[in-house]
Image (cartoon, rainbow, N blue to C red; front, top):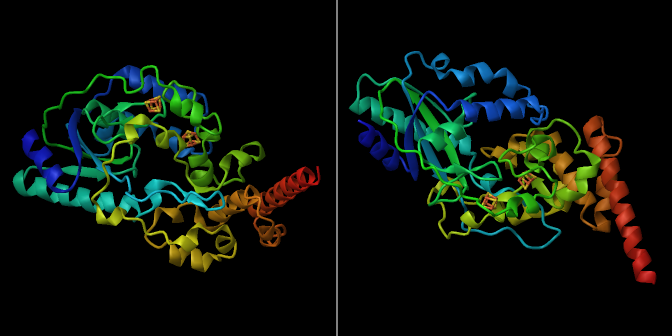
Length: 350
Ligand code: SF4
Ligand code: SF4
C-alpha cells in the first residue's frame, strides 16, 4: 500500500514523498513550543492559536493514521538580475502561486489514492493549515533541518515546497534519515542580513526579511530597512549561500517558470503602480499576499536604499498618504535616500 502511494505521488510530479506516523518526537515539539514562548513569531498570532490542532491532526481528520508528505522542487533555471538598482523577488514567487499548484497536484494524488483504495479518506494541505509540515516531512525522510531552519534534501537542497495528506490509510512509515546537513558550516547564519538566524535551526521571524516583507502588517523596522537592499518580496540570502542549493537541478513544473517581466524589476515603474494594476499584474501569484499597501511599503524601502535621485519625487508622493504604514515608510525612504545622496556628494567634493 505504501509503495503504491509513493508511486502515485511520483506520477503526480512530486520529486519527494514519504510517510510518517502521526506521533512526533516530543523533543521536536518542545523546540517549536520554546520558539513560540520566545515570541519570535512576529505578529503571526495564528501560530500559537493553532497549536492545539498541530498537536493532534486527528482533529483535522477523524480516524487519521498516517501522514503522506510530498516535496515539489521550484528552483528556477533563470538567475536574479544582477544590477543593484533592480528590485528582487524571492525565487519561490517567480511562477504561479505555489498554493494553487500544490493544491492541484495534491487533489490529483487524493483522487489516485481513492481510485486504488476505496476506503481512503484524507485531507490535503500545503502551507494552508496548522500542521507540523517540516517535522512530518523530516520524519518521513524527505530531508533534515538546516541552520537556516529549512528542510534540506540530499537530492534537491532546500528549494522545494512541502505538502501533505493526513490519511486514514494505514501507510507504513518510511525511514527517517538521521543526518546533519550543516555540520561545521555556518554560511547561512553569517549571510543573513538581519541576524535572524542564531544557528539553533530556528529563525527569529521578527527580524526575518521574508516575514517583514510578506506577513507583517507594519512598517519595516527602521534599523532593518538598510539590510533589505533592493528586496521587495522575501529574501533568498540563507538559501542562496547554502552549498546544498548549488546543484544544477531545476524545476520541470511549467507553472513555476518565471512570469515576472523585466519591467517588474524597475523600482521607478513599481512606485507608480496603483492597487488595480497590482491586483491585475500579480493575478495568480503569491506576490499578492502582502496586499498592495504591503507591497508598496517594500518598494518604498528598496527605493530608499537605491541611491537613485530620480526616485525621490516618486517616494515623496507617499509622504502624506492616507495609509500610516506607507507614510512612515515613505518618510524613512526619502530621508535615507537624501542622506546617502548627500554623503555621496560630500565624497565627490573631497
Ligand atoms: S548554509 Fe550551511 S549551515 Fe546553513 S543550512 Fe546550508 S549547510 Fe547548513
Ligand atoms: S530569509 Fe533572509 S532575513 Fe530571513 S533568515 Fe533567511 S537570510 Fe535571514
